Amino acid sequence: MMKVSSVIKLNLPKIKELTDAQIAALEQTAEALHTEVVQTQVFPRDTGNLQNESTFVDTSKSKQGKVSIVSSTPYARRLYFHPEYHFHTDENPNAKGKWYEDWLPGGREADYCTNAFKRIYRRLTGI
Image (cartoon, rainbow, N blue to C red; front, side, top):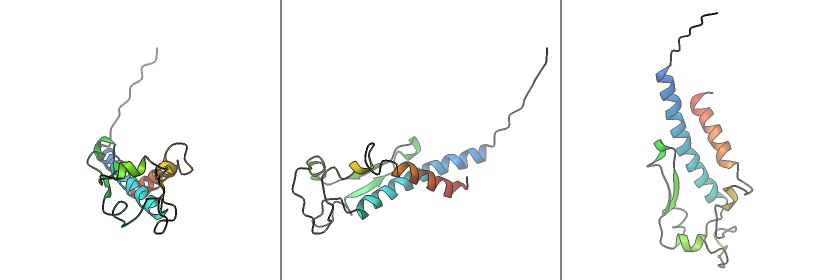
């Protein structure tokens, strides 16, 4: 019978650094997605209030692994869930309802957030 023993030493400061980088990368990924959606000009736009001042990234739960892009206007929900509306395309030529659908699973940009997170995390950690 062979006797084997091992010692494991955790580098706790490095683990904390990597965990903090995950949180920062998550927050920056949400900001990148918001910027991407604005730049593709899919938000319905009249005054620009919805896409600019009233839509923001909520990072209050980022330490639990959750960030949200929030539109705080009372009409955002109505516009988002009614793609049959006739959206003016003077300001944003690609304006439509369900403006995030291209970045959701099954959409043509579905890998955007995964790829952005990887890129940002690598930049932050050097890994």
